[in-house]
Image (tube, rainbow, N blue to C red; front, side, top):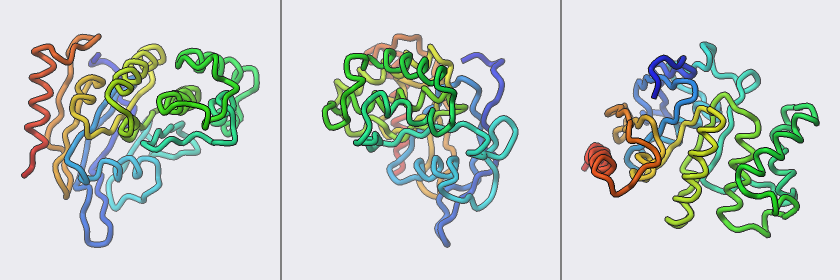
Length: 249
């Protein structure tokens, strides 16, 4: 990762409580523009709570989250969110699903048409643009969601275990497609996963969280050359390092 990239997101002393339960405990880190950052940690440690705090689904207890130096504001900042569950609209065709976010943001029709065509092509769904979601496979559904998110050209794309329900072969294919899209667009990606191999395969940097109350245990720079070989010495060593860090029992 280039050290001279500007900081896009600043998380400062982020703390979140639910009643007396402390979930996020004074978390601070930055995300650089165009970075692919993965966050991993034990099951139930608060990874999704952090994303929900970024999207204002939850009010934070204390601290702040800044985008471009300003408190996160979904009216001002373009934040896209991809969930683990498929979030296509079943009554809309593929093309209409990809266009949905652009229509919400009132992007001019000519620009929207160009983006829809571009991203449908990038995710390999040109032949399926007039299909409805119930006519598509699981991997195709997730491609539609990814195309819709990238088409809005977000300031930051948040991904919450988007491939968790897919088998290994489909995961690898979609991970490669995601890397290709990220490299072509320069989108800033924050990717939550419990799959350590996935984090090592995708990321430029990995943040390892502790069990609740959640703090940052370690930040690890991932300089493994792409395309990455999951059987290489460097890959296995980094995967083992992250695995050892997550063990909390």
